[in-house]
Image 1: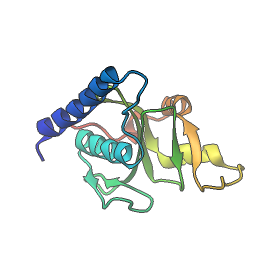
Image 2 (image 1 turned 180 degrees about the vertical axis):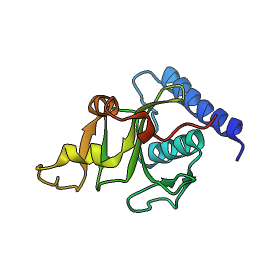
Image 3 (image 1 turned 90 degrees about the vertical axis):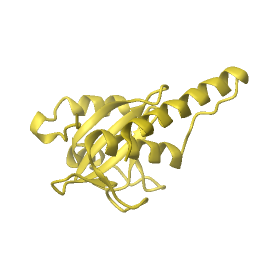
Length: 150
């Protein structure tokens, strides 16, 4: 894959969103839903050298070269949702310029413990805020993280 072309396309997409919003004040063109999820999965796979699985793969989105299963969560808002306990989680916030901020990178059980004792939501998805994930991320040891590639 051409990493530079991919990064350029994402920057162009978000630049186009900004231009459309400038042309039509009060209208929002922010990507959402499946598009944000797919963009996030591709950004993370590219940055961390992961192999993406088929879309909508149950329980994980990608695999490291050593076989660690990774659930990727991406948002442009204030929270992400989980349906099940992942082996490892990388959660990101996609920024307005098409880059991202890592908010959590660690064992999935750290996140999943936050839902213990809570009734399962009617939609089956537990929500957790980006701010809470940032706090949990501070507790992850460096050797429990997946490193970005150069």
